[in-house]
Image 1 (cartoon, rainbow, N blue to C red):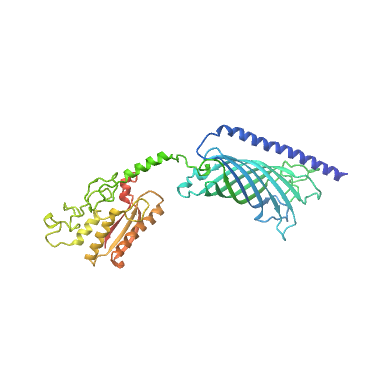
Image 2: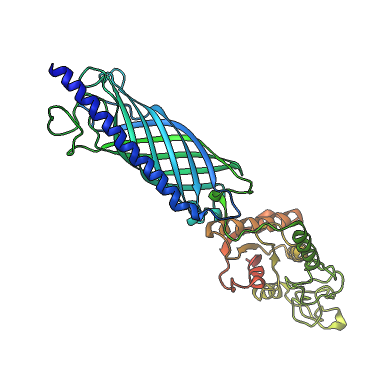
Length: 452
């Protein structure tokens, strides 16, 4: 008689608990959507995604002494729908299900199946932390919320068929994203769940309270059911826009065909080089330099030795001399001293475009001058020193400066200079110029030389 009474009490309690928590969960879902509906405004990104995943679960406790579960138990799958209010915040509703199992050969057998339904808030840390500046294909979401879990124990403490029980759940987790295409992303998730008002241990073989109530009922003083999942899956983005909120960068606008054509035309006009010196007209300070003239990064004719004769007309460009002698000194002078002076005063440099290790066309003459000087002075050794501007990560700029020095080193060897006379080194960012000025940054993107 007592056994029948206990069975009826358990069934009645489980049914009441089910109704109570299902009403709570549905109420939260309805309230959440009512609160966020006014925010569904027209934007330049897609808001919705459907996500599926599967992987591992692990019930941490409570467990009956002697009952063990695998650290990585393949037994969880889930599906969710997510809506992003903007590129930073959103909400999701998630349904997960799976089975907790024993460690085979080390624990008594148990099978506890579960279903979990929750609603969560979502924070897009990938956009907040500007991942696009260094890892444009990677994203990171935080999610957290509440819901309910259904647990079905087999076997169980009483050895009879009893209805599944329901517990409320608090969930938190992080989701990593990798963009495969504008419509699909690979996702990996780790989530931690806390079950409240859980009547039995996860194995179903113990009452989850310090003392047993007769008949057993949902405990008010109990251990929190703690479990976690680790999964892999896909996020499938829905909508007609080109990009989802996960990857949307505010301020990134998409021009029309007419606007693009206009911008391309403006760029072509800016890149015109009327005098053919390799410097576009929009930064050329001397747009009418003669053909073959050696110029600096602003298109100005160079006079390396300061004798008033432009380098392209000066037969001795690094040694001052009168015009009557084609810029060469009348008396014999030490060319090495003048070459050192030209280097120390910054007249001999090789310049590079932004994020490039190949010299600008107008700088090729500098390499030729250096090569000719070394051929005329076989006792001189040279160090090639690379520099970069201050845009970008410091470590990257150090490597870029070394690549620039190496490219000039390779050009000099190709010109016939013995490698034993040359060395090269990257010096990283040149902080002596104003990094806010585009013209100044151009001067920083260079290689210089030092006579040894």
